[in-house]
Amino acid sequence: QVQLVESGGGLVQPGGSLRLSCAASGRIFRIHNMAWYRQAPGKQRELAAIINSSGSTNYADSVKDRFTISRDNAKNTVYLQMNSLKPEDTAVYYCYQVISGANGLYYYWGQGTQVTVSA
Image (cartoon, rainbow, N blue to C red; front, side):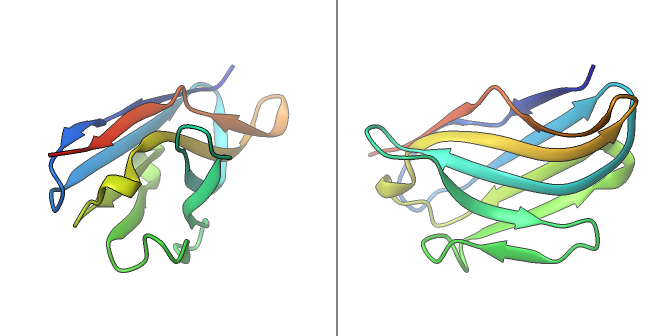
């Protein structure tokens, strides 16, 4: 069984920064794509940033140049550094990982962490 545990959310003022982390544990052979999605109240879940196993990244236009996704393969962890935060970044942020494990290739979601940007 594979589990993802997120941390790092919270309340921050506009212009501030937060760093999210998502660590995978269990019988993991290899982690492929890692990503962060977010869901604001009343809106659909959307992709914020993604990083593949080679380290190539892509970002939603709304977060480009403000957010940075990175990964530490030795720790099975993906990070999201969020700078210059805006009130419209307020959402629940979900980690997503595609993992090859003992039972095959599956995708997993984290439990979600709330990010609130407000003065």
